[in-house]
Amino acid sequence: MTQALLKILLVDDHKIFNDGLKSLLNEQSDFNVCTQIFQAKDVNFTIQKHHPDLIILDINLQGINGIDLGKKITADFPRIKVMILTMYNQSKLLEEVREAGLHGYLLKDATTPELLTAIRSVLAGNPYFDTKVAKTELLSDDPFGDDFARRLNLTFREVEIIRLIKEGLTNEQIAERLNLSFFTIKTHRKNIHFKLGISNVAELIKFATTHDL
Image 1 (tube, one colour):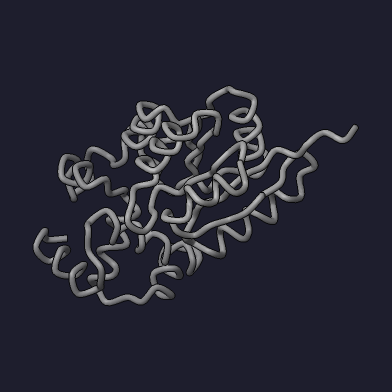
Image 2 (cartoon, helix red, strand yellow):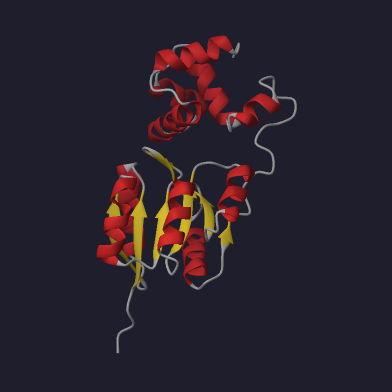
């Protein structure tokens, strides 16, 4: 008798990443991405329709923090495992995930073997928390200042990108300067806007000027 595939629901509003993760997981003989959604508002309906075993969430979702959404899911559907997959390399957020009762926290730059290990661990009932998550987000001698940056949950890379945006560089120019992909810069900028509660470049430049970045 064929063993039933473990059903996974993906929740990430970055479509390219969501599609890539779906393709990767569906290559595995024991997984089936039952569906993927891009907005938090679709979660409850989708869970009731597809009955996933695991939900993989981004933290940065339109209208809601993924940790809060995960906490609500585990309260409403206790049999479902919930794992956070994020770019935020911040111990504070990892601890929030633990305290919320979620089952895993993994960085998006994880290797494929680590991702698969984490998923299988969580599905087997064993929480998985990324050991690479930094204990401190900024070096103590960073001129931006530890207390201020940590209060806003900004990473060193995000501060660096804010400064380059203030200089007038485009996403393409920033990507070239930092030796990162265009899509990585776009994601960082989206995360910066989310953390600072701003919606456009003018507001970001005003923030940088006000705080003398």
